[in-house]
Amino acid sequence: MELLAILKELLTNTKGFLEAFVSDHGLWIYGLLFLIVFCETGLVVLPLLPGDSLLFTAGVLAGNANNNLDVMLIIVLLILAALMGDNTNYFIGKFLAQKGEGAKLFGIFTIKKEYIQKTESFYEKHGSVAIIIARFVPIVRTFAPFVAGVGSMKYSKYITYCVIGAILWVSSITLAGYFLGNIEWVQKNFEKVVLGIVFASVLPVVFQVIKHQFAKK
Image 1 (cartoon, rainbow, N blue to C red):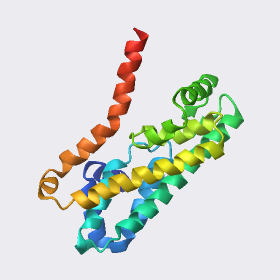
Image 2 (image 1 turned 60 degrees about the horizontal axis):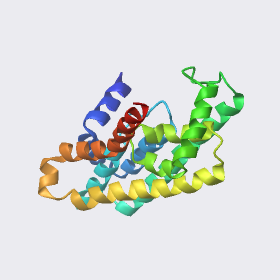
Image 3 (image 1 turned 90 degrees about the vertical axis):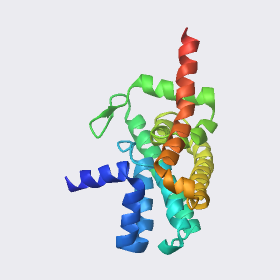
Image 4 (image 1 turned 180 degrees about the vertical axis):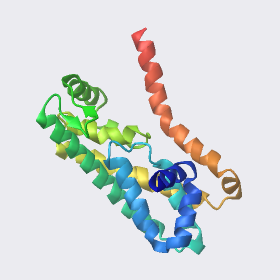
């Protein structure tokens, strides 16, 4: 129950949770941030962990001199966390695909032939750049590496776009928090700013859904 309470607080009050953690545990915040980003990108069963909001908040905390945090160290660590998470997800998908149709992930997610076919057609249609785009979309970024592993995308091709996506995602949002976090309006409307970031991230998915519906008609 305590773990569920921690997860709830992290999801509903990311800024307050991280501020309290820095106050109580100091530089251990680096490890916590690394763990959260790794789990959000690497464990397909944990897609709801904060991603964009976590990066933005981490930048805000680093921008506060009282916290004594190094924003560049945060960026490097979280890029590594994202890459390790993606690779974990990719090879889990690869492993299950090799086991063939009917393979299950944690007894929940079942690999079907149609999933593999849809995965391959998706990447054929949108190209490898879809991996970079998916990085900025909540939930989708958790499943994209797994889906790439399930499909027939070669690792040498996948990892190139994976690295580019990780660098762009972590650095852009973390630095946005670092440079904008001390602005008075942002501080007073922090929740709205974070929701705006999440909404902007989801827009590409909404656009594709609407586009798909019109195409069907």
